[in-house]
Amino acid sequence: MNREFNKQLKRLDKIENKMLNKKEIKFLKIPVMDKIQGKIPPKLKSTLEAAFIKSFNLVFEKGSAYIEKTYDRDRIKLEHDLNNYAIDKKLCSKYVKRLDTPAKHSKRVNGALTILEGGVLGFLGIGLPDIPLFLSVMMRTMYEIALSYGYDYQRDEEKVYILLIISGALAQGEKKKEISDQLDRIGIQIDTQIPIEITLEDQMNRTAQILSEAMLTSKFIQGIPIVGVVGGVVNYNIIDKIGKFASVKYKKRYLLKKAREKNMQR
Image (cartoon, rainbow, N blue to C red; front, side, top):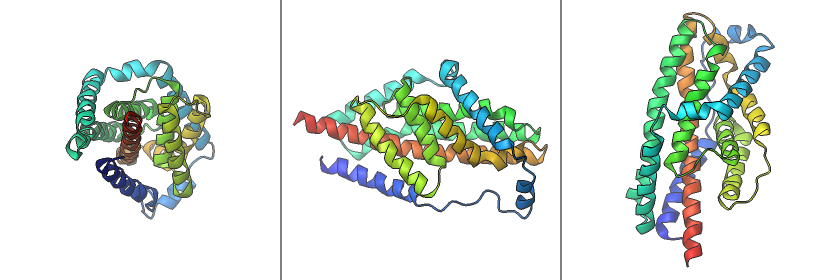
């Protein structure tokens, strides 16, 4: 592996380690939060989890084609192909940085969409029913980032990888580090055509559980008219966190794949 590959990977490792060791800030440190959490119905978590599973199934079975109509898939693929060609000719930081451009644009646009969508529906007191909309924006973010680094999300293995990224971004402590290591292993398995041990259905269930835990309080608040406008901020924070984690993992996977290709050419 040449010096530039090492430089890029070390930079990514620093960013990744910062994410993995970052202390989580509790959502909304305000005096009334304890009272609000105490009023959350016990069944809400299981209801929320079921809603996420249903929405994942809908997206993976029928929704991807509709989500693709909301962005220019061909343009992102072409941009990646051009950047990838330049990197194959000469690996330098300028070309590697260009890989990030579509991903950064996606995070900005989709972050703004979640603020608008979550804020408006929260103002109206609509909490749980907005999950399919929220999930569509989340998956659009993931799809655009995957394409930015040359990965097609249509295979089941890649869908599992995407769901693991969402889980890892929202997990905390040792669980976050465990999922991060798992992502590195599965990324190599997929890229070297080694079967992975996780089924799509199992990972959908696990990711839905993590999402429901991360968003339980916010979705309850979002169901309260006027007060629920806070849902837009929460949705944005979730998408931002997932987008940043996805960019790091996909870029790292891309660079490791290029390094393997270079080694095989020697």
